[in-house]
Length: 308
Image (cartoon, rainbow, N blue to C red; front, side, top):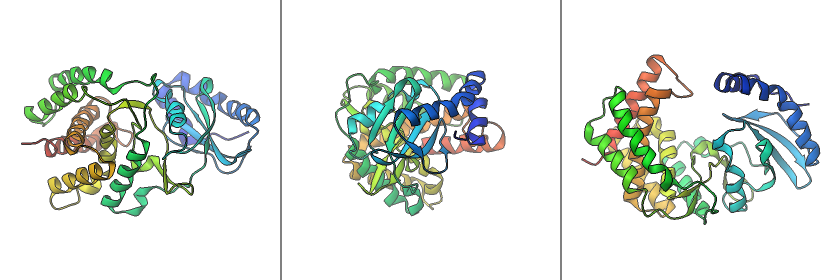
């Protein structure tokens, strides 16, 4: 029987309360049942992400990982995305147990593009992978265009209710993008959280994506998570605006996407992040001076990305 990592157990209970506590207590038995079901045996140390554990296993198909996530609406379409890709730019899906929010997946290496240390190359890898992942989306996946009106309404509420340092033109540009970008989106499969931590080095292809959300819409949407993940590195440059514009150029070119749409999605994500920090905090800081510093950084980034 596996041992659930203590840090994962604590964070799950802190986030989910009593339902999280019950799920953590049941998790070793869930894993045992899935190992039997798929004829697998443990093959390494159990690791974890934010909402799920990863168990390296030996499976009939070879080295694999068993991923079991806490039941959450945000995880529902992950196996659908893997199934649609069929191994194109992403790890292969061998088996799925949707009632357990569990999957048996191809095993990749624990190395990510972040280890390269070169922002251009990291962003280029993500862009090329985005292009690989741009396949027709299954009909039942949530459409980004359906979510855009709620984004615009939330931005208006946040601007009225929360303290911030962003000029009106910055918030106005984000609202306009939420409304405008909703129209004319393709029915393309979108990863939804394509940052370096969700890209792993592999043998079958140089890099493979993991942990998709599984949306249908504009692939340029994925620049948001990528840019936020590289923000601290890009802000070390002497010219912040030039560094971020360079990042947008590299992503748009490598992903073969329209530069203006990439820019507008990035600006919208930055404004949303600035307000999210004030409403909910972040994993690395929930309150206090650290959160205030992150919120101020998000304000700065949103302003940098707003066309004068």
